Amino acid sequence: MAAKTSVFYLTERLTCTASGTQVSDTIDLGAYVDVADRQGVLVHGVDFVFAGSDATGAYQSCTQSTTGFSIAQVQLTDLNRGTLVHTDDRALVASGALVWDVGTGLMNNEGDLYPDNFGPTSAMGGRIVINDQMYLRGRVNGTFQAGESVDIVARIKCSVITLSQKDFMAIALQSTAADN
Image 1 (cartoon, helix red, strand yellow):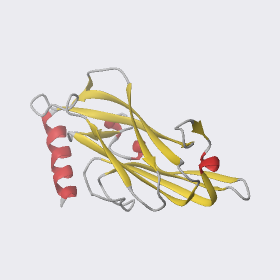
Image 2 (cartoon, helix red, strand yellow; image 1 turned 45 degrees about the vertical axis):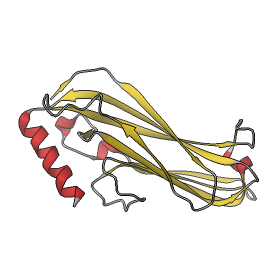
Image 3 (cartoon, one colour; image 1 turned 120 degrees about the vertical axis):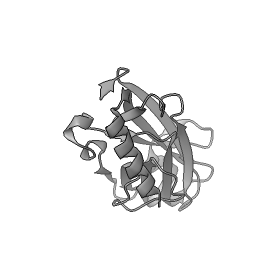
């Protein structure tokens, strides 16, 4: 496996406006993944950033956009499952949560899965993705202030790599098996 590029970042933002309603978006990897050249994306790490927006769209704290107890959940997957998945799902690349209580001031950030838990040492401590897209899903459970929202931003640290034919085939087979 050889790196074709230096590290770069992909970012995507979800805007949650209603309690318990899942929002999602896709991250297009088509420009980076090339099956003919056995080229994939190595995800080195994923950071999730949580922030509120007031009724005019201006940045503010999550605690200002909601009342009472709230939890934001987010996941990044390399297959389209259509919903948030369990942590044993092979398509899961990264996930996290932020819990806060406006009344007590409690705030707890939970990163329950890190990309460097995947793959052999030869994978350079990351998750290799050979699919054309990744899928970002999130939701907030809590009571929103009128007209306000909570934004979840994924910052994905990655690079483009070239795999050996055997490595590419192994990842393709694993991804196909996970799709069923």
